Image 1: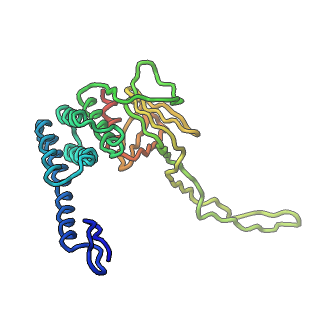
Image 2 (image 1 turned 30 degrees about the vertical axis):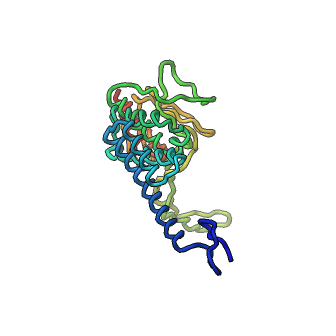
Image 3 (image 1 turned 45 degrees about the vertical axis):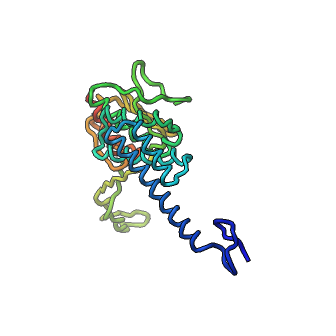
Length: 283
């Protein structure tokens, strides 16, 4: 006769668990699951509605007690709530100063670890939104710090606003060929002398293909755009850019030059890249 895997008491012939123990366990599991949901929902609402954090902490403690949610799960649940709140605040892709301050106060109050926040991806979205807000207010953002050797000679007095790693650089290449040509016919006039007639090259046809030139870093600064790759490097001043073209995954630019061709930088975040560069060019 085995013992119940829940209470440890004899379970009966060929039984592994008491039915009453199983029902009690299922109720407890359901209560904990609901408690986790309630904690996450309460924390998210507190951020969005600016609820006093001391009141939120008291409510979380009560839920943990009544629902049996272990206190060591609190950090994970609060990080999840913080991420959900970021999604809600950035539905309009704009983050005002008060919203940014509420998010920061929440992480400070509950001492949420930076690594856990960064792993959600929401932290980067907050920084991007704050950078765009600074620019729209006429300020040069100073929220990015580069570490290590960037291999780029930035100009004196310019500020790096954002850096995109693994940026793919594309260019349009023209290919010209003749189609519809003929080899002609050779007519013998006399021994050793031939006259060729009917030969022509055909019509020239030019095709354009967008090709991947290099992959490297794209640095967006207060004055220029820099691309640095193993095969290609360049600096483009905003004043030398004639037009911008938005892409889902990057931005295209056309320089102000007679022989200029479109240049495309694939960053993975086209909306942010376009708004970042276009608005910096206007400062």
